[in-house]
Image 1 (tube, rainbow, N blue to C red):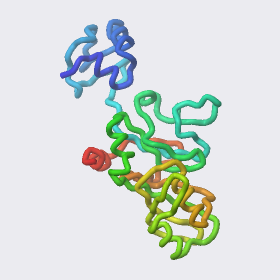
Image 2 (tube, one colour; image 1 turned 90 degrees about the vertical axis):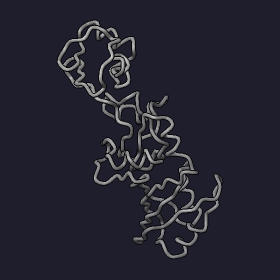
Image 3 (cartoon, rainbow, N blue to C red; image 1 turned 45 degrees about the horizontal axis):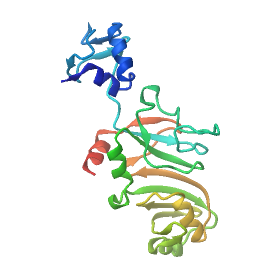
Image 4 (cartoon, rainbow, N blue to C red; image 1 turned 60 degrees about the vertical axis):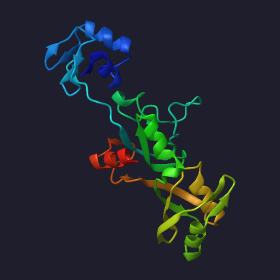
Length: 229
């Protein structure tokens, strides 16, 4: 059992002060009963509604298909397109991006509501794979595969990548770190500047057929993987 105001605030209805005022104004029901005591202990699994709409738990992890041209930040002082309004309204302000994708890189970006989980997903020691599809200048060959596997030196350090497939000028590869523009730097320094870059997987979370600009909650299998990290 948890306090009603705590549940409402944790699910994005508002601040503790705002939800307490809403309860007093009879805007909240629990299992069909109007509640005026914001400190009431209730079962989180109860049917809790605000203005008649169900108040559901916020997702732990969300997958978002970031288009190219969007900054991986919440807000931007220069008014550039960013992540501030890309999630459903009820989730905004409660979830944060897990790392970044360059503005000119598209594909899978995760959002989390748990800071410790985010740290686990990002820490190099965890070795969480990120899979990308890169269109490059030139045609990939066995030498590129060997160079990336051996490690390519960049100004940020030396990094490795595993090439999983080559289709002419399209390189499918995985890395286990997420340094700023790392994949682009590696490919450029290996002699294959990137024309376009797209992330398709983060750990076991796959972009799949999620439409560009859309988001979805993590599946049960994806959450099980996250909890096991």
